[in-house]
Each structure stands twice: as structure tokens, then as C-alpha cells.
Image 1 (cartoon, one colour):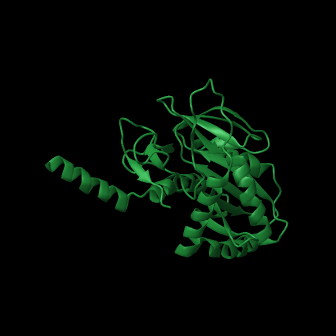
Image 2: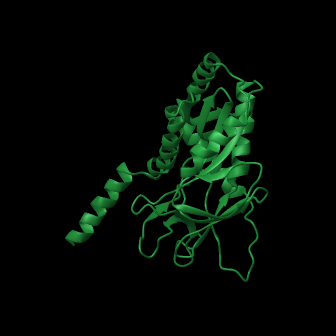
Image 3: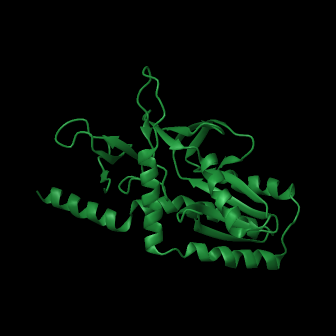
Length: 273
């Protein structure tokens, strides 16, 4: 009885302190650390996180991290997944396979960042070079990722990747222009709670309407990873939260997020209507 009570208290504590959104931001913070090494070794740039860029339909497009420098703007899409990653530039979805062989599907981060760059370019209204980079966690393995037009790297390769891109690009902005652009875009990081909630709600609605890709009947089912403002990560064990559907009982057909480390971890998270 006492153990059950302690479990309830601990669950409440985890949910109140280590929320999915808070843990999802952790990968972005680690990415920023690597970007700061560029400044440490003599390159001068400004870093911003979580920009809510306005779209022409009144919605927003959230960018994880940008690095503004004399070369232009590096636009980073940060993915804090573990496991094996498979994908290519043109496919709508990529696959992440966890150590327990569970396969999860996520929206193509290259296409996702293309959308971010589209609205960022529209917002700044200037012909400034925008460079797309997809950054995955050091904990994953890019098992079979076919991409030639956009760098797809693990975080510990980020410094070298930007250094090569940096050396191959001419300077287009002065230090004064970099600061001015930083101040202009910094305003997009101060989004109000209502804006953030609306952004997440729009994503969830679009995801619900989106037709799911067809699967080979001879293959095991592949779960869906919902595109999100942050990564959906289990606050109890740090595993990936996977969209699941109740198959039996009075809640049959209802969807929820369950930990990918099930049955070792039985954390679940309801999807609010």
C-alpha cells in the first residue's frame, strides 16, 4: 500500500518537474553547447533557440536553433532520438528502430526544416543565405541516411560540419548586421503561452488529418512519432513516447502515448481532446 502511494507521489513529481516539453528541450541545449565552441575558437556568431516564426495563415513555424554569423544563418533541426535511424531526402517519413527492435516513424526532418526556412526567409525579407542542418543525438546511429543536399549529422560532428560549410562560404554580413538581425529575430523567442499552445494544437490537428503511409502487411507494425514542438520523451526513463491505440476494453480505439521501453517502463500519457 505504501509502495503504491510512493509511486503516485513520484509520478506526480516527475510530471510537474520533468515535463515532456522540458526534457525535449534538453537536446536543443546540448546542440547549443556545440555551437558555442565555434565562438570559442574564433568564429563570431549569435545563437537563438525556439523561434516562433509567423506564417501567412496566422499560424507559426517553430525553429529549434539558429546560428547567425557573417556567413548567413544556420538553421538547425534538433532530434534527440536514440536507436538506428533510416531515411532519405524525398521520403515523407523516416524510421527510428530502438534497441528492443521497436520501429517508430517520424516526419522527414529535412522537409520539416525546409518549411522552417521558407517562413524564416519570408520574415526577414532579405536575400541572406540560410543553411539547413539536421542534428541527431550522439546516442543514435545514422544507420542508413541518404542525404546529399543537406547535412545530417550527430551532435558531436556539428562543429566540424559547420567549420567546413563556413570555410566554403563568403562573408555576406558585417558584425553590425549580425547584431541587428539577432535583435530582430530575438523577438520571435518571446512567444506568449497562447502562441505556443496554438502552435502545438495546430500540429496535433494537422497530424490527425494527415493520411498515414501504407505499410507492408508482411512487416511488423510501425508506430507513429508525432511531429511536435519538442521531442516526446518519457519523463520517467528518458525513452521515446510512442503513439499507441487501445485495442481492447471500453477505451478501445482511443489513442495515447506510451513509453517505447514497455514493458520495462509502463509510463503513459493521455492525449487531450
